[in-house]
Amino acid sequence: MALTHNVLAVTFGIMGNIISFIVFLAPVPTFVRICKKKSIEGFESLPYVSALFSAMLWIYYAMQKDGAGFLLITINAVGCFIETIYIILFITYANKKARISTLKVLGLLNFLGFAAIILVCELLTKGSNREKVLGGICVGFSVCVFAAPLSIMRVVIRTKSVEFMPFSLSLFLTLSAITWLFYGLAIKDFYVALPNILGAFLGAVQMILYVIFKYYKTPSVVVDETEKPKTVSADHSINMVKLSSTPASGELTVQPQANPDVSHPVQTYGGDLEDQMDKKMSN
Image (cartoon, rainbow, N blue to C red; front, top):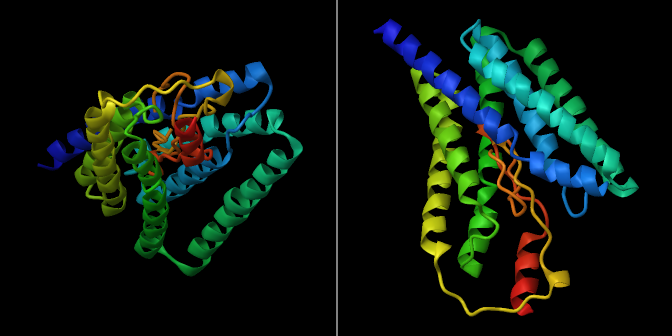
């Protein structure tokens, strides 16, 4: 029986690594565009900074599990590397205001915040208690990240359009959450499984909304090319594993950000999306 659980854990862990890696690569089209135009346009850095923080948290948590969290470490280490590249590119092409804002958030969250967590855990907790404290922090952050899709789902229902919610993005985020959910169950880790229950549920809801509104007929509206809403990037988020970090979804994508447990990708949505949609409809 123990052998069966080990086989399942390894199987789901490897699958989770593969799917999460695809999710982490979701923002690539966004950064290709940024590099070509040498401008961040309307994109934001928070999804990438959050995804990096999430990956760092899960690595630290997995290190407390004496080898049982190896597959969590591998994918989140890859996530840290990829998200760091995204952040460097963002800072390189950002204007002064966006660059300073990104560096402030990066310093407060990823350096001071993470250092504070390590100090508290190392000095005030030991053994299983440390794992519980870290697990609770990871779950809390993951739940916040997974709640991000609620805003885009509200926009889809209001506008009856799935333009800003690509099906491939929702599909891979859902697969990522389901895979890491089963991985958490296989290794009997409540902290890995719990946030992915929410992730899988929200992903399924997104796909249902996509099917419902995909062929919804609305009066044709002539939109001036100069008035079209800006592209929204599909990142990771989220994320987690953003996998956190989802598949590239073309020019019109949605910003996810990173599945904290990478298990995720975590997904966040950048830009004034509702304002853009209202502006488009009013024209």
